Length: 446
Image (tube, rainbow, N blue to C red; front, side, top):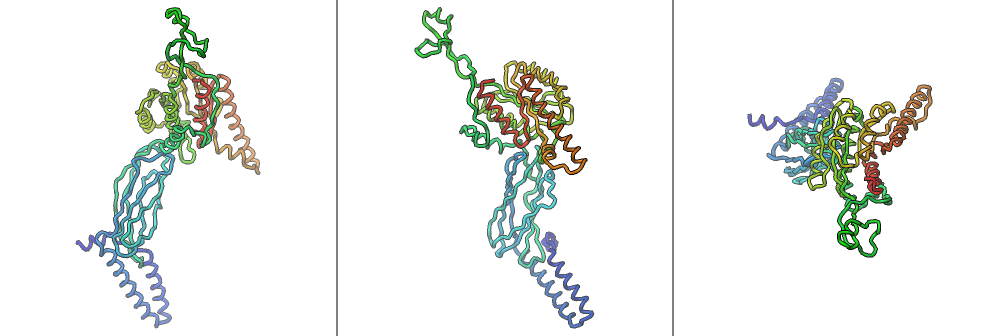
């Protein structure tokens, strides 16, 4: 039984079967040329002897190889995440390994394998990358390593690292990239505009005695009368304004682009813009809505705010409901009295879709600075830019141009009611949102 247990992880390789097929062909030919029969018998004995020898040297070492999968604490959604495999070879001769890692089912990688040669008594580290496109838990299976010698007739299987789980969070890799740029005021390196400040917004700081050079318009006449000395109001730039990322998680945000849903692009952008707002001394918060408003993180400026926002974004659950903008308007009016910047991530494909919600958008814009962020259909742009050669293609191209034109009409319609908007492609969403935030901040609109 102990011997059977040892040979259980033994797998016959294709090279063995190819050799058997060759011997069988020679055996058939030996009926025509009888002298070949002795050669066939000799080759058969050699094949089985080499197979026995190959099995013996592979199973002679108790340890053979030891493998270990090194996973990050969490995956970044929509980004390439590194996964490392460390392998230690205890054989005193070079071996060939085939690594079959049982990656989570969400990736649908049915033919994942890595082939490598390991030197004798060596330690190697391999790297591959995975790009998740959904938030949630990713369960890894076993790490299978098949070892063959130079003969390559049989393989010995080793199994390691079973049952590992990695959660996938919104794109914190993107967050770190822009975080470093925000600290150094180098956001323009990634195409983010630097905008000249126009006007200013001031908030009261204190009353002080007038000194030569103070603005005469800031004289506080009541304080002057009480003190019998010229007193002025001192102001400072108003910094801590609430900035909310409002995410529509209804059915219009289920459309995929490059494997990632529009909802997840919005979540990744909301994470980055919240961090940028905190770095710019504003208060950041989020909320999500469809049939009702959920996942609310009240805008604050504190050390733990980004962790709260990250967890809330991770837990946003999608649905296929029609989003209730009336409920959103009512909740905002009831719960948020201080004027702030609302970045509304949604999608309008037609003017009719906008007209159904424009009353609520105008209501929100009365008390807050509202920016509606929606998406270009890149597939329509590709169709418009392609050459039409048939009547059917001309028809499709005309329909695509109609929908594209309606997107521009939506921008004009929002502008007519004083509502700012961003019409962008999913891959440029983060950059364009940061641009608009910095523009609003620079012009003192909040």
